[in-house]
Image (cartoon, rainbow, N blue to C red; front, side):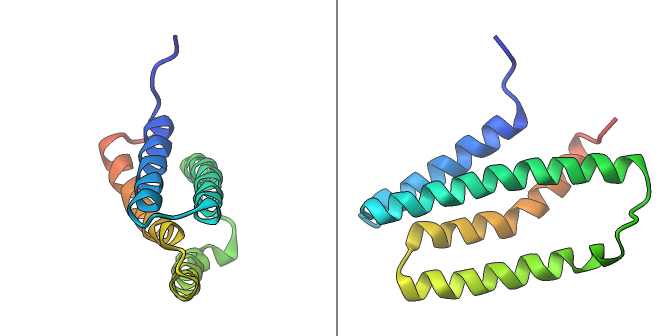
Length: 116
């Protein structure tokens, strides 16, 4: 059996947090569907983040607009948060918090476990 990987734990924690939000807010099918969409988007983000970490560790950044990445992340998540509040999509709103916290978590994780 393969060892439990960091991305497995991250995905499980996010899934548990999203499911808890749906259950606490008594969400129906649409809320579960939104949570699944957030979870799948998170999985995509995990892979993209790991690819970016590996690329950054191999060479210097050559993409000129890389500095805008954080600006776009914060801008899109604030916009999504407003949208989800207006739609009362509480589990998806929890997803906003997850996506805003994830870059800080990865930075902290890489301090503990640097890429070798």
